[in-house]
Image (cartoon, rainbow, N blue to C red; front, side, top):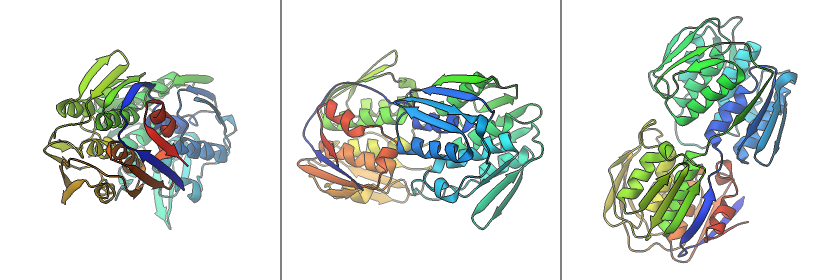
Length: 416
């Protein structure tokens, strides 16, 4: 159990580099098994979810080593196509190995994935996409078995722009005969990153970001080198932390376009936002005003992963902010904990109504999930006194050395 202690009232000043993207790294780690070749990745964050993916790779027979933010994978020794239940439970993104193993081995055996309990997150769209490529999918006794003697290119139409289904379809399509087109594909920057990695491997993929992706298999190269893009949710969290605590923070090595909707609402709340090439500065007095309404949507809309941390930043904002969550039914699990700080949050169905309060006071909280835990730390920065957050390792799944990053900016944060 991790124990975070935050003493509020200290403004954030300085600059920090934004970590590499967790959500871009994980599908690329799965993609590394597509061919029996070597892969070298740079700017990979050191996170619990990355460690979980590396354990899956090693179980499959690959060599996988991380030193700092550099990662080496040798997939030539892959000997298994099944991921054990215990490893699947460690993170939601483990399901992305399904498409990659099906492409490499003609078979993938997995159980439903774990991760944060944010409500129903069925993988029906993933399985439907693989079936359209020619896979036979059997579900029984908590196990999913995908098999295909031959995958055939086709047109896959997704009824919802699911990130995971798009990624699994892209990975499986690299082994299909002929061209595959994905219509209604997710448009997140992480999809573009996967496209760029597959092209670096020797495939021909284009259209990522448009909702219309075309995959044409080609012979894989003997090795692949690739740099992971900056993490837009980590950048959003740091920007919200600066907004809540006050001060002036410069985010280095980031892409402002990737989290422009978050910056839009912070600016509306009264923050000064300055963007330059791969650099964003957030200046805040710590006293914000209400914004909105905010509705979470698939990219390029407002990201559900940033909803809890923006909510935390707005707890003391003057006026009333309404946030409607449309992606995950349990994404408001942080609300009861934030109320312990003195926050005034009313729930109306899938909407939260935040009435800004004059003061927040420290309290003992329990992290509910990855982004909810981060939200509690953000709120703690703006609270009077000491806030303690008990955390079963959720925050470390998505934030690299978050205590050190915040402390270097002037926050009083300790992790025990």
